Image (tube, rainbow over all chains, first blue to last red; front, side, top):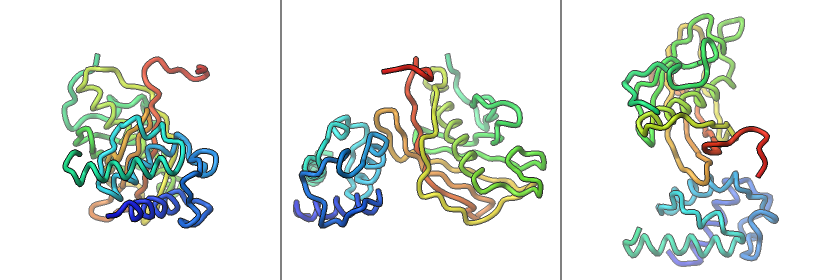
Length: 90
Length: 152
């Protein structure tokens, strides 16, 4: 899976799971999760469940995910997790 | 100090609810990820309406109490007292059938994820092999020392 495929899948999953009022194509990396997408701390655990199911990665109680502010940061985080799985590190 | 839980466990021994407000009967299996509880809907069950039918929203309460019993059972094994838990949300809730007085219901719980005091759990309520309702619970556990009205 390429980085772009991971980004596209992340965007589509977020739009569908959280019923966001924008298309996957409108999900730009500079968007703020809280201010622009209305994803708050209550949604963090749902994001963990969503990405673990979508990508087969283990996020668990990783506190790093609640520090993520932008969609671009989230893309980088998920790409890192997927690459770690591919490398047999997680 | 908590104590190891023997199965089946009386739900009232695991939940803060007492008497009729304890809406499930027993916890029959649990580990850190999953649990199964049972209830027989006696005619005077608090969640039945005047016609002896379970209100559809009551499935959520059954799931929430089963999740609470699961958590308390796991804490018992860990030797710690039960913590305050708040039902913070419901997702993907679907009702597929009605339950009535005298039905015996099985409630299955599965912990999907935990982060910063928030847990996401799936639940289903079955009568024999028929799934009557299912959904996801979001539960917030603020941790020891929390009290309502506390700031910060």
